[in-house]
Length: 176
Image (cartoon, rainbow, N blue to C red; front, side, top):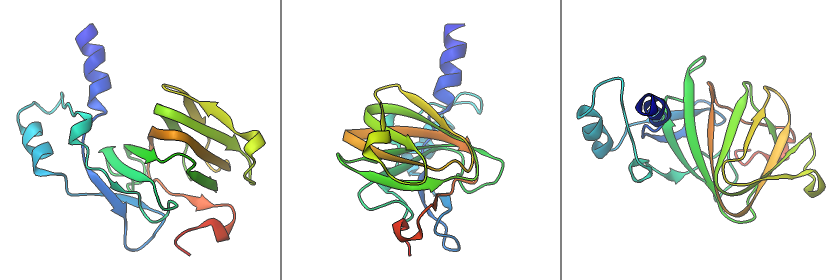
């Protein structure tokens, strides 16, 4: 039973790198995985894949995010409609993610640090609710929300694709 539960949890840890697709700067797509990740997968059967944090391919977050965030695809392809994906984001202290929406529910787990989340169309420090290690929130599809990081913060997002950010205020969109 223990190993069965652990296998389910570990299945979520699969490495890949990511970047925005060339056609739509708000869509995030998976790209080639590092050779070390492919070799590690070949040593396991198809049902039990395990990846450590050191096997994730971190890089700058896609341009739809304000500068300063780091991004890694853990599992799946965030650009595929109807497909499950998991990504991780790292934010420096003071990072702000302006009010935005997603077309699908977004499930966020805080892995380290303090992720401050608020709901609504206008950023408000007074509306921020702190989520600490292992804190969790679901932002329903098309619900405006915003966030900030206190200290170095890492979150894991899992959802059904496509993973897109649409800013409430167009002037907040770093791709414009």
